[in-house]
Image (tube, rainbow, N blue to C red):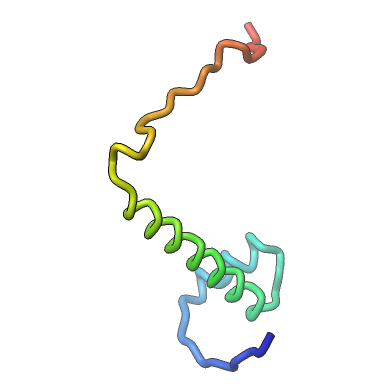
Amino acid sequence: MTKRKISATIDPDRLAEAVELTGSANVSLVLGQALVALIDREKERQWLSALAPADLPGEVIPDLSDLPWEE
């Protein structure tokens, strides 16, 4: 994959949080993961906005009756 060097001004607190969450001090890797997540989120948003409301299931209530609840 061809890479492109960029210069960007970012919030240092957000970068520190991203580094902490990912466990990676490699800023390029962290920003690459962020771009992948952004692209995935936008594709999903566009896909969902293309659906008519009737195509969506609406609220789904999970059946929790079989779970072993502690009493």
